[in-house]
Amino acid sequence: MRNRVSRRPLTQVFKFQRIQEIGILLILFILSLFLSIATPTFLTSTNIFNILRAFSWIAISAFGISMVIITGGIDLSVGSVMALSGLITAMMLRANLGDFLSILGGLLIGAFVGFINGLLVSKANLPPFVATLGTMSIARGFCYGLTGGWPVRELPRSFMFWGQYDIPILGIGIPLPVVVMIILGIVVSLFLNRTVWGYKIYAVGGNEQAARLSGINTGRIKLLVYTLCGLLTAVGGLLMTARLGVAAPTAASGYELDIIASAVIGGTSLTGGEGTILGVLIGAAIMQVLRTGMVLLGFPAYWQPSAIGAIIILAIMFDQYRKKKMGLLR
Image (cartoon, rainbow, N blue to C red; front, side, top):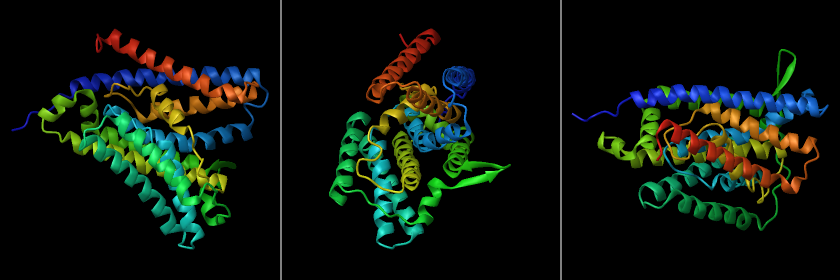
C-alpha cells in the first residue's frame, strides 16, 4: 500500500495563507484610500470599471501561472501566448470560420503551447525558466511571421461583445470580462482546494521527492498545470483582443511581468507549495491600481516598468524573509 503525503503541513500552510490574504487586502485598501484622497478621479465609476476590466485578463492568466509556481515552476511565455491566441482567433474570424471555431482555435493553441512547456519540463527535464523562455520567443515569432508584423483588424462585433459588453446588474453595468474572471477564479479555486488533483499540485510544490515517493506522478502533474496555464492565458488573450478590437503581433508585450507579479504579490511562493486564487486576484488588483495610480499622479510612463520591477523584488524579499521566520529556509 502506497504511503500518503501528510495533510497536516498543507493545512498549516492554508491557515497562514488566509492571514496573508487579509494582509494584502489591507494593502489594497490603503493604496486605494490614498489614491482616492490624492486624485479626484480615482473613485469615479468610470475609472473603477476601467481598472476592473483592465486587470481581468491579467488575473485570469495569473490563475494559471499560480498553479505552475505552486509546483515550483515558472512560465515566461504567457505574454506571447496571450498575443498568439488572440491573433489565431482573429485570423480565423477574418477567414469566416465562425465565432465558435475561431474561439476554440485560440483556446487550443494556448493549451498546446502550455502542453509543450509541460513536456519540456516534465519529460525533457529542462529548467522551467529555459523551456518557457524558448517558447516565449517561438510564440512571439509566430505572431510576427503569420502576419508579417501587421495587426489583424475589423473583427466582428459578435466577437468583440466578449470584451466590450457590460452586464446590467442592479442598474450597474458590470464588464463581461470581470464576470468571466470571477467564474474562472471560483472554478480554479475549487479545483485546487476541493479535488485530489489540487492536493497533488500543492504536494509536488511542497516536496517533490516526497510526493514522488508517495506515488504521485509528478511529471503528469507538471504537464497538467502548464497546459491549464496555457489554456487560461488563452482565455485572457481572447478577452483582451475582444476588448481592443484588433489583434496585434506586439500585443501583451511585457505582460508576463505583470502576470508573475500578480501571483507573487498575491502570496504565491516562488519556492513552491504555497498560493491561493483569492490572493492572486487581490495581487492582480494591486498591480492595476498601482499602474492606474501612477498615471493619475503623473508618474512618467517610461519609468513604470522600473517601479513594477522594484515591487516584484520587494515581494520576493518579503517571501524569503517570511519563510526564514517560519523555519522553511536556512
